[in-house]
Image 1 (cartoon, rainbow, N blue to C red):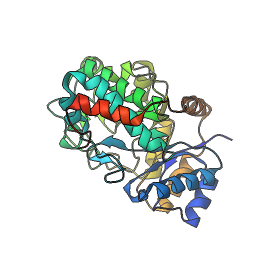
Image 2: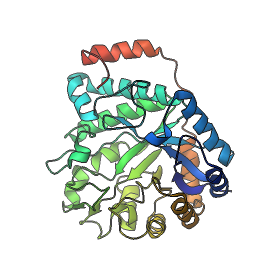
Image 3: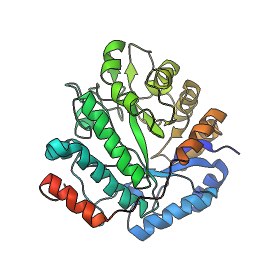
Image 4: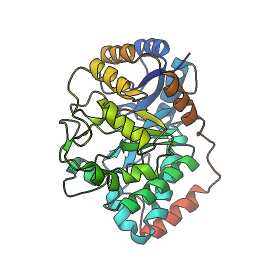
Length: 334
């Protein structure tokens, strides 16, 4: 049986009886954790075990651990990181190595909890329009730098046994609205987008998984990328990304229509799996019912992504931290 075409979350620190029954029936491809799911290391480890037991397999569990404002594991138990942009600027000429070490360290903390995926790197290009909700989460203003830093971050995670999720395909930087609340529109020409925003994603098109941008590109279509067959075709054929594509949270207000309608439209457009979170159980059930099982093509990409999971390389984490602090000229934390 194919995986369910969803990635879902849990309400609390442990699963309810109803959630266990739902996950057993829906068989989602994977799960995502939020701050409400995080307390102690033993609790997180236990929740991950519950999630996998519910589907009866080693399902991937992802999280948003970018550092800065967007990180679910926080001090004092886990490392508190500078926002990515501040970190890159602090590292200066050593940014590529520093980003590798940063995300190798993040992978170390995730893997100890059996979290084996992270929604990073984020290679959205900073331009003058970039909204404040996104700006300090980005890595810079240079296409070449984004490709190098994104690759370094991805390699750090892969070496640490954690699958990276490339985001936000095909580029969220050229927007002046927060897609959690509004639909951003980009009026740049297709040639401009190919040379700038899309280029870092093309350089990283071999990564195992990616997440869409809820952004409307007027040069491509009159619907947001997540729901656009034309944009998804561009992602596959022009950018050349053949990994598993998950939507950004399908419940975000950038998308009009119901969650069920948007889930169906996203799958029809060419997305492989629906990310749906921060919603009542009834809404998650409705989304899973609409999404159904993965297509054969999506299943193949899912299996290929999971095949890239590996045992972490052998490193001395204390030595890694010392090297990173030497590069930064101070502590790694924010």
